[in-house]
Image (tube, rainbow, N blue to C red):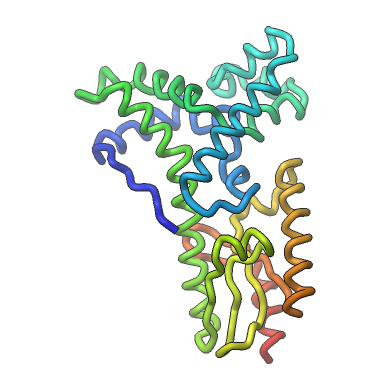
Length: 256
């Protein structure tokens, strides 16, 4: 899949990173668990992922509509986790989830860009508000997508090293959407198994993620019924390091 390209000045982008982190604008309180959100659906293009993130931001706004004004003000304070974490900790899981389990709109990301701009404009020469807004967009949306892409490529390279006599057939978007299978491991034309490549966050338990897992389980079952093969979840880091080696042992058991 195509990656997002960072068109910002590399030095300006690098110099905003420390402030971005110190302001905690990257915290799930501020932008949601983006690595979880990107696993909720199968996206055919990077543009579909970006639009979904914004749609989840609109859903978040709807969730705020019937809340007391004082609660909305807390949830809309993107830096509350930095300035007064105790107030965040006192909220119910349901209220915290409004922030952590949803995306943000374009306008809300722009607001974070304004906060970033106000904190770097005196130290980074010639940086503009528009550049800071793009810094936020790229870190939240683009780096998340690119990280998943990099993880997938590196993980397949790891698997090729473990199983040099087999090949890994990348499935297209329609197949992936129907069966939740990223790759098929094959020997010649024989299918050994289906494979999903997931980040460590896929092992977490959240309402949205649990629903996604249930959907994937149903899709995997349909795959097994049609092709007579198992589907394995490979949990890996972005460098391709596999975090559940017991799955490798199970795959090895299929070919011994």
